[in-house]
Length: 264
Image 1 (tube, rainbow, N blue to C red):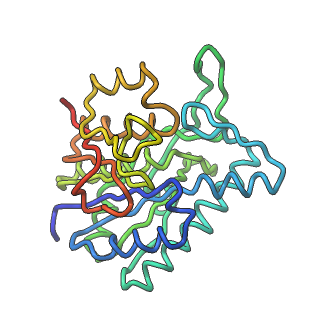
Image 2: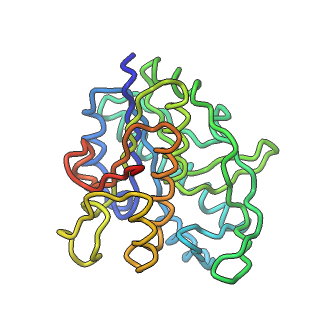
Image 3: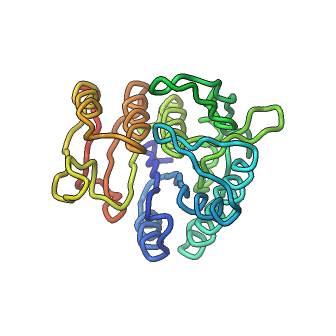
């Protein structure tokens, strides 16, 4: 098997728009290498929560997840979105297998303890911080010609599902495969062409982000919200053996443009 592996994480508005998602999946299906797809679906979860009369609360790009919200995200991420993506890939000739972290014990987490965020004690509820990932099992699936499609859910090993940020799931899968000796490229793709200096100007792509420039971009407010965990996960992945990380448009998953995340 080709040891060069691609992890593609799709999120944002792309997951919610059928035409955009199908276009991305067609590109993904055409990749000539072992690959893993990780998806989000937060906007769909938020809409369903609203229909059920549930409040959505985000803190530093993470969804606070009580028991009712856990039921919503499990249904949306592990069910509707995951199986819709799998069905679409099967129609494109890709032998995809939809998984949460609980399936095959791929990713195990513990429940995040309450913590201080901006001077406030935040109880995230059923949000998981990852303990382990089975890169060897993922590698065996890839060797068998199977394309894993990972939903942003894990489990605690004691019977409880946990909500995990999709960017973290993607970075975790990439790190686990790198630990097995694979050359791994991690691509985060969404509706924008990269990380933007001005969110209203798609031409303001920041071509390179390092740990030093990331700290400055956070301090001056250029990077905030959901982009924070994305870049934190990207930098962590590079520190732990992933070869390359790119944040780019869903129309360019081959990585010709976008923002490169580098250790230095």
